[in-house]
Each structure stands twice: as structure tokens, then as C-alpha cells.
Image (cartoon, rainbow, N blue to C red; front, side, top):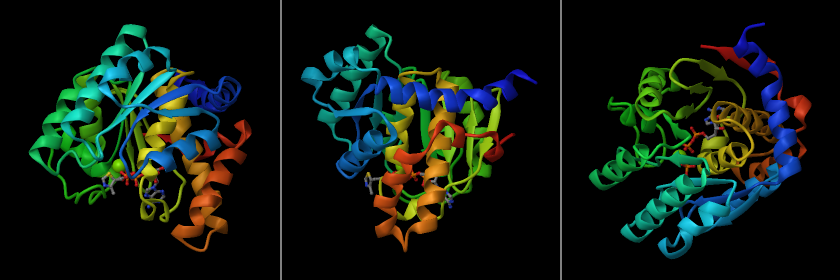
Length: 269
Ligand SMILES: Nc1ncnc2c1ncn2[C@@H]1O[C@H](COP(=O)(O)OP(=O)(O)O)[C@@H](O)[C@H]1O
Ligand SMILES: Cc1ncsc1CCOP(=O)(O)O
Ligand SMILES: [Mg+2]
């Protein structure tokens, strides 16, 4: 077995068991749209969310959290100050942090803030194909928060971004791509209903924080992607559409067992 195959065989299942045992505290700085959904996703999956963003306290909170997640979806100068203070607190305490660059390509402000945050050593960057394409130096066809590009078009950008920032980069879509700049993996699963529910990606980023609290960044991102892939597929099989998908997905996240986080949906790039 190669080292990568060994990682794939055991790491995601072990990460799920460890996360459920630890119920890690995850500080989420996320957008107004995503807050409740992301918190419910973390609770269902097995972590403990806290939405804490004010600059006056975000750094102190990051020092006691297991992980920090930073999502720029509804950014404003006050929130950016809270993000920067939280990241400084996280670095001071050795807390890993995860970046979600929502619609970073859309305006100059978003782009500047995202590039600045990406330079502050996130452990994981998780975005859709259009966001990762732009951050990796190529223009794509995204509009707003929704992707307009295929994941396959963003694999080179993801590898470049990982090499530049030192982060593990996850590009999500119909199939997800994960890289640390040298290793690359494809993860299959999920459902086309998922992008029709707002904040699905934001909630995935929050869950990547849950796993980053108890596993190394590559294993953590892989476990989060697999957890969503399994639960999304199962929930879509019982849901009538985006509305009934949401409760079914929360139930499915809670029901995923370590033995479900298997190799069959992962292939090396
Ligand atoms: N067409 C699809 N088929 C299966 N899963 C999908 C599809 N599109 C998105 N997903 C899943 O939805 C989740 C959110 O991904 P994505 O929609 O790319 O993020 P964002 O909401 O940030 O744009 C991921 O788990 C991804 O695998
Ligand atoms: C609709 C919207 N507008 C600003 S943030 C946001 C949520 C985006 O969520 P996701 O990136 O998970 O689709
Ligand atoms: Mg998104």
C-alpha cells in the first residue's frame, strides 16, 4: 500500500470517530445567510459551533476554540477586523483555521480581502471552482456565490494556490478535488440538489473546521468532503427537492458512521 492509500483507507473513518468523541468547539465567522444552517450542520455531524465575529472578542475566542473558520460571504469592514483579530488569536494559540472565499472574484473589495486572508496561512481553503480558479490566478465564469465553472478546470489553480499559501485546497462541485500541492484526490458523491440549497458550501467549510480541530489539514478536508458526499447522496435519495433535502441532510449527517467513510468514492488524481 502507498502512503496515500493508507491515508485513504483509515484516516476519514478515524477522523469521524475522533470528532464525535471530542465534539470540538468550532468558531465560525460566517455570513448572515449561512449562520443557522452551518451551526446545525456542525451539531448534526458531531461538533460544537459558536458564531463569534466581533473584533473585541474574536481573537480571545480563537485561542480557546479547536478550530476557526472564516467565510467572507457578507463581509464589511467591521467583520474583516473581526476576521483578522480571530486569525491572529488562532495563530497565537496554534488553532488551525479554514478560509471560504465566497464570490471572491465578484468585486475589487472581496478580491483584496480574500487575497490578504489567504496570505495568513489558512490550514484549508475550501471554495467552488470559480472561486479557486480566480484565487489561483485564472479568470472563470462564476456569478456571485454560485459557481460557473467545472471543478476539472480548477485543478491547476488549486495546486498553485496550495503551493503559494501552504494550505490544503478543496474545490467542490459535482465531484470534489483535494490537493496539498503535490497529492491530488477526486471525491465522488453528493447530489445536484446540494447547490440548490443556499449555504451548503459554507456549511461544508464549517465542517472542515470541525475535522481540522482533530486531524491534520489534508485528512480533515478529506473527511469533511466524504461526510458531505455520503450524507448528500443519502438525503437526496429520500428528498422531494431542495426544501425536504435540508432536514433529510441534517439527519443523514448525524447517521453517517465511520464505516461509511470508505475508499470506494475516492480516486487519486
Ligand atoms: N452537481 C453536484 N453533484 C453532487 N454534489 C454537488 C454538486 N454540486 C455541489 N455539490 C456538493 O455540494 C457541496 C457544496 O459545494 P459547492 O456547491 O461547490 O459550494 P458553494 O456552495 O460554495 O458554491 C459539496 O459537498 C459538493 O460536493
Ligand atoms: C447567497 C449568499 N450571498 C452572500 S453569502 C451567500 C451564501 C453563499 O453560500 P454558498 O457559498 O454555500 O452557496
Ligand atoms: Mg460558497
